[in-house]
Image 1 (tube, rainbow, N blue to C red):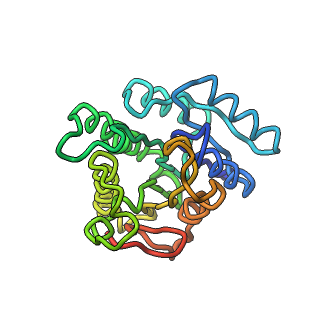
Image 2: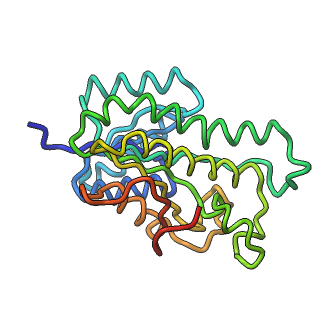
Length: 242
């Protein structure tokens, strides 16, 4: 009988991903830290181990299918199951370029990580997640992906007119909705999490929230009980408009 619960987090060697790993690890989860740089992933795992958390670094670049398959094989062979997938890895490129001027290269690069990479990782790990009696998927998104917020000139998010990043997060939200509908009659629960404007290297540490605050909603969605929501868009202050 399985007693340990395993959580895999992409982009987990720093920022919100690492803090989420720490909080879940302190709750007893075995932490599998995905990182593009193998050495950085292993170092992050050592930090958690020194805090009394069982943690393992796993090399994974969400834009490279070979590393995704290698990571899945490693998880199958070493751990045999997966209970929680947290799709945390994300980038923002193109700076503050106007929608009429941003390069297609920057848009494609953003989508390769934020959207296509997320789908690739999720599809590869679904067979393992379906073996869990209570599988959970949390997709890191943003309030900047809300069409309602972006179309409201009075909303604070409206000033950030970032075509690549914002639209990639709106796409993530649609992935959440459609995947949750597909698995609505199963134990799997899939939700989008908005961690808020958090001080990380993604925004040059200009965010106003801490990683501890940001991780709270991610952790909450990762440990939902059987009566918890699925297919929703959630922040620390409640459900958000699409």
